[in-house]
Image (cartoon, rainbow, N blue to C red; front, side):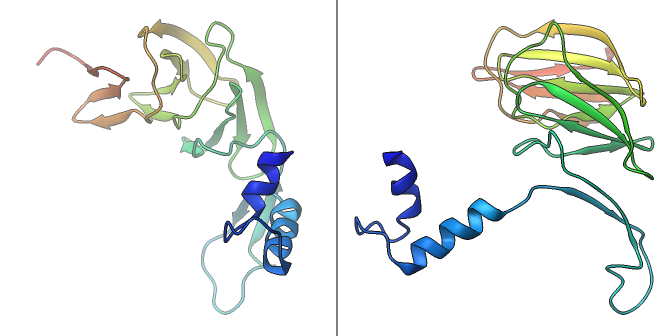
Length: 170
């Protein structure tokens, strides 16, 4: 509880004032959500172009991935959710068995595969789609926090102590 009070004390003066309290209230009432809007139009299109809202099992750190009409949400706890990008309907939601752990890296996609990377260094290769399937799990054996990068037909992964490149021999 003491840590909560310290986080609320914005000016670090050891007391909670009105400004600190309003910050706390705003932070507590915030709602995390993924929203979809139709593009185009003129003027205030907020209501006209609103398509859908999804509010369950959302990531705080990893960014969503939109790939081939499916929106992938990687929760820090290792739960991967696939949403239909047009309707917001949940197509599949499951924990990545065999690659349990924390996830801070965002999922990425290339070459008709989706890649996730756990903090513990497990790279999961998925067959994309609403009913994604695990194709392979590879253990790099060291901590990873950074999102993999894709360039020139290769997948680059930075771990705590190394930078790996995965791709076809050139």
